[in-house]
Amino acid sequence: MGHLFWLSDEAWAAIEPHLPTNQPGARRVDDRRVISGILHVLKSGCRWRDCPSAYGPRTTIYNRFNRWSRRRIWQRILQALVEAGWIEATASIDATYVKAHRSAHGGKGGRRCRPSVFRVAVRPQRSMS
Image (cartoon, rainbow, N blue to C red; front, side, top):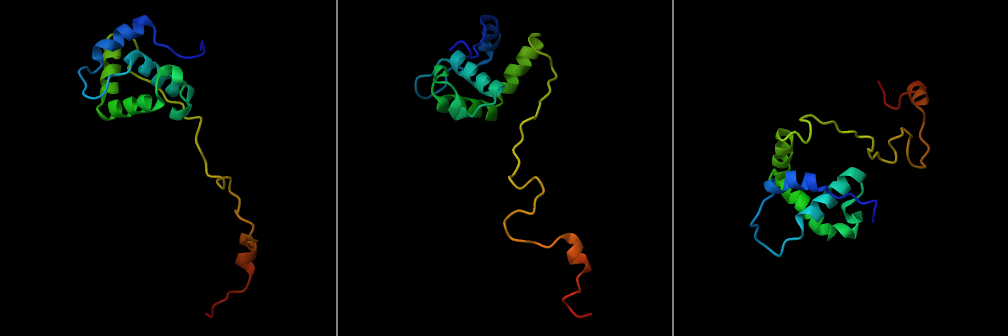
């Protein structure tokens, strides 16, 4: 499992003080492992369900990301890392992967034969003037 992403000790030391504590519910899965799993999914672009089991249950990884996003915990962590000088305040997102509908290439679609625009324009009108 050498190809998996794991937080370094220094990065974990910077993040850990900003995590929520004393959360109600079942016994908590290791935060460092779950955050490493979240970062792995975000870096690799894989689906949540394809997250390796070394990071813990995939539902836990997805739910933790989702809940913390709604509670703005990620923004607080990133702001703290910016203030500590770990990361820059600006970032860019590369959207090279965009799904397109199968007919988005501009084809007419389907097997039905349709007249071209030119033929439609030059044929006689069907209605009376």
